[in-house]
Length: 155
Ligand code: RBF
Figure (cartoon, protein in one colour):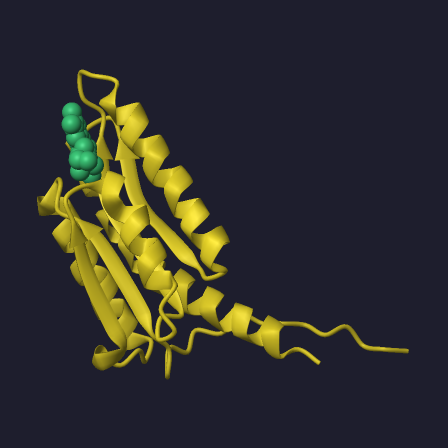
């Protein structure tokens, strides 16, 4: 009888290439999320020289940059960071949806993990409260890159 082949999540970033795309819009919050992400990547063993950081104007532009980065041979996962806060107009809905759909598509089309680190909130206070969630993005990127590698290497 064959034993199941089980893939356990690993949080080892050694040898991985990770790209981080961060919007400048609401940069007071987005910059902090970027800093948290870079610190966590380092703590997981991702070498500084294997990290690429790209800034975009807003969350709307994240997915296009993410897709190009994911197509690179030296990038194993991409983390997208942005803050979309509901305003008086319906722009909120469009930008939040475009960012989410585009980020899913960048991952599906490239076959690489593209992590959704876009906060979508009603107001600034809610967004500030959620800034620490950024510590999960690096973990998810490294875990997914490792999981996909293990799936590829299964025999
Ligand atoms: N970008 C964000 O990342 N977060 C926002 O909350 C946000 N709000 C916007 C509101 C309006 C009315 C407009 C026109 C743009 C906003 N953007 C926001 C910028 C958007 O992501 C993009 O950079 C620009 O629309 C240019 O394509």
